[in-house]
Length: 446
Image (cartoon, rainbow, N blue to C red; front, side):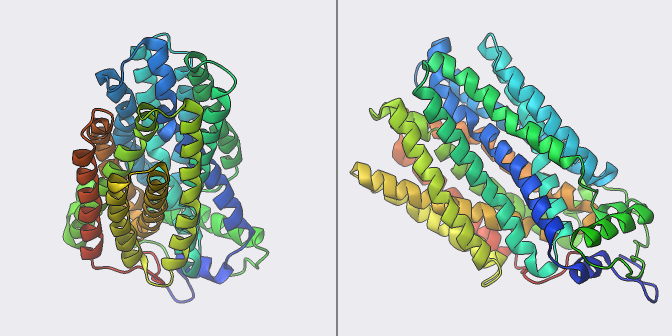
């Protein structure tokens, strides 16, 4: 709740009045760079696993291989809850910086692991750091972008995930042509962590969210952030004072399960859980699956690179649809299309059919991710926005911890069972998205 004395305006009114300009595009580039770096880290072990297996003598479908694929997600499960909660208490910017720095440190350290146990530990710690960037980046972007542009910008930010996927697939392919798998995976881990360092330097100059500052009782700093936004966009700064919260709430996770937020939180958890279990279950094992089908390792990485390229038009379509048909319908439609793609993949009886159906899944799944990342932060009020994003993200991480075990069925011969589970998850997630029953297109943030 906010008080609005005569002559004062809300943060949304100020941001809308300033409009879109250089500040938002720079913020998109800065957040996008670390978002792409996060994608590289999250998907890294899927590409590194053949080399790690060769280095430490892991047979196909070994239990330790599943542990390795699970480790990053386990860290993200804890990190999403912890960092999202902390960002609502101490500010977006502080968590914005710390999580990226830790991600770089732990990511590089993993490249020097002398054994599997140490590698698993560093992947868990890397995931813990990554878990903070997911909720915080989206809260920051949502709170600095004018209402009419917000949906598209949130999808634009998610589209950097495709760039990270393309980068890690291309890097894995390049390294596979230059050195043995036993050596290449270490270089892959080390190089993949470096883009985050560039992102860290770029983030130092980003101000904290004015919404977050107001809810934490810092109106002067909030005004300063708005004035910086105006100057960067070449607009005058002589606008009225910002309306401030009537009372500062102490952030509690339990608040997400009271009143109208309870329904949203539970159904969003279902969306994120189903989408994540299916997506990571398929793509964390896809390189290994293609390898076991007799495909040469370089060809595996080239194929994966093509599938990553198929994600890009999915994002662009999602960015258009969220403002034309709405967030809820876009999420639901892409999820149902993903389920169709799964069964086309199951029925494919040629290499061309496998590639086409995989490309359809990649296209639809990343369109769904783009839309759900635009939708989720808009459903929570400012004082619990990153906590809510963290809760939703944790649901995804819980699914991610489970998904490698289900996905291992892909390499042990139970392909129909695994793909039926994944298709069912997409249908369940689509139902949850639809029954949220709230459309946020064109609506100012709470």
